[in-house]
Length: 407
Image (cartoon, rainbow, N blue to C red; front, side, top):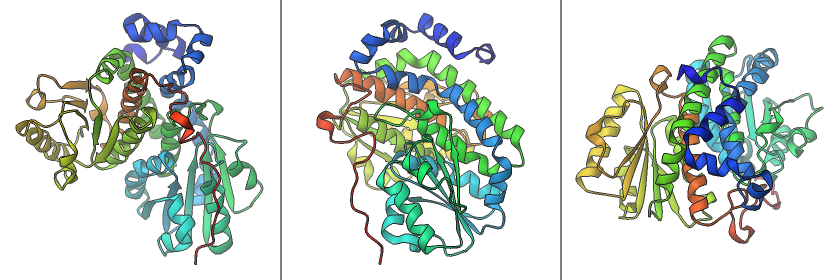
């Protein structure tokens, strides 16, 4: 992996296209042809992520002083977003709670719209962190406006990828709202969130490491290196997996990786326009009913922990699936995956370096693998990754809807 550390993004892409036939084909077409085929933005936004994380890292470190003021004296931390942004919040909740030593929750923007401050922990003062790609969805500004009016002891931090969005513009001059915009390339042009998701996740992650900037930089650098190699070595493998005859997909994960599995399931659902149905579950929760979802046409994607105790429980479940001969095949993503849980038709995605990280820090790596899998399945379905929704059922920004004051 050390060989890739010093590579620029352009050098890395050349290495990718030299080593992976599918990458050579996709990137080898002209930009105009890629846009005509509908994958120009999505492919780049997935592959650019290891480098965008480093720029987001520096953006957040530069904001450390103001972020310390936001956190000073708070008794609870709440993170909010809608859809993928909510799942990004869930991915960082546990490490932030462990480091800050205060109640830390992830709450959907919809729950806050419907219940207002009643959906929040009762302790005050508190900090609400709003994560948003565009900041133009109805929930984004609606939540901030509602809580500014009804919760005077609640501070607001907005992290968004779009400095021109409604969320960033409406509250830019409000003394009770601190706004941070991420580098412009994180504002995905594709319908689905890819690089915006992982960058919002890593931006929020800094809140637990404000007094350890070098550790935060090291974490972002390690994730960048691991993911560069994940894509470079597994691009064609993920394309081949996506070509298998599955109509259902299950995504399993524990702890923060369960939140990553929720995002992974959403990516497959969105990018196939619902043609591949998906569910996500924890390894231990899967036995309690959701296992009945698995048929002969089901792909089972397993985000394997590096923690010995957690992994022991996860391997028990994988062995049970094998005994029962469930599913089309398993795709196991992790490091040092034991051969005992790999069937003949299974696929493994080895990610060297994951065991060097805390077990709750690996969500971004798992999500990138799932993004590529969904991207390739979208192409297999004959859809356009940049705009996969048939008939415009879903849009890049949620359509406006009426906002009602909670009772």
